[in-house]
Length: 509
Image 1: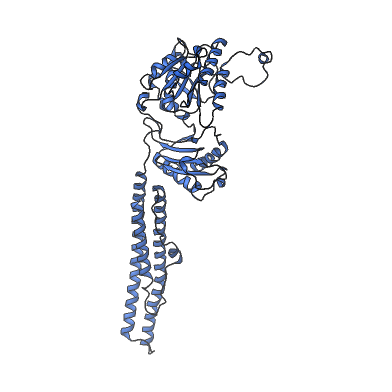
Image 2: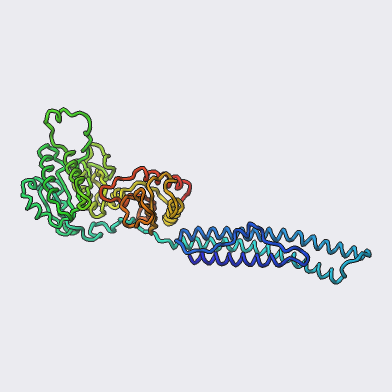
């Protein structure tokens, strides 16, 4: 900001000095000259304090003003040089005419006028050289100042959701979690042991017993629980086990306290794959419980919740546990409906994924497979795409410049007074710059322009430039600010991202 102000003040002084020199310097008898209209029109305007990216843009504009003013001064000096040379030649012709007997000024008057004109011409040549040197000097100063402004722009050194270290405990203690599993089978008991040091008073509830417990007892067990982790035995897909899990889940969800706002369900790869079409077993009333039913039980219960008692769910699909973790390949996290039907996932991986999903506040469903390389797994990177979730990503060479670019782009096309509909985004938006990028928030259609940014819950997109340790720098876009039961504005998101991707492809940052 100081660099831009300094450049602006210097440009203003240079322009004023140029105009003051050129206008009154005309010789006697010659109509006073004025600076070229282009240079007058480009006189620097007052520079207002703005954000660093805006100041950088203004500094570049000031450089253009300086360059145009200098070029204008140079052109003006050239234009004035011609009449001055003509006047010198005229004075010499008058002297010759006088020597031939004509009348005219005295010899002394002619000599004085000729000397004054020659001095004026020399002054113009010196001014032209001075302007050329000034252009070079200000171009160099501009480059240094803009680089200084860009270096000073803040940027998150690591992903905004990183919790540092290699354990969940680095993020601080988690809230009280109720782990609902199968006693003696599945990952439930292992998850309780995993969360023992991180969560405040983790408890275990047997899913098969929960359906037979009095609801008063379940209410007592779940007091002050802020989250549930439902962990059936992924290696047992028998109708009896699945039916018992579904009934236990139904009983537990009926006793969930108001302060419990999140449920993480471990399900099996292939759930919901058979939905649709005509089923003979359903027609004849012989339908058996499947993994689909467990997921449906959870999602149906969450949909019934009001805005005063929201219950958000995350479903993590995994494969059956293998005989040996090394036999199933490297750990891989992918989209919710992805993953081969015969994929396998080790129990240790399922436990770690559940623990880290709570620690990183993962809020979208996904699939995890594999089991080897547990000691080298970077859970921050594996689960980062499912926080939001992430909807766009690109590697960058300089994340600081990428952050400044996306901030300037947002201000240019979606800033105050700009209508998002021009860019194909039908939903009105508000923007706010962050240390590492910018946040877009959607506004309800038809509302006034004085909404509080922090109170908007109609969804949005956040662009984040990152330089994580051990990873390539990148720029990501992820969903944000979606309130309870707010439907994702996929069309507006796509229009905004398509516009940005098109403009981004034209720069190399």
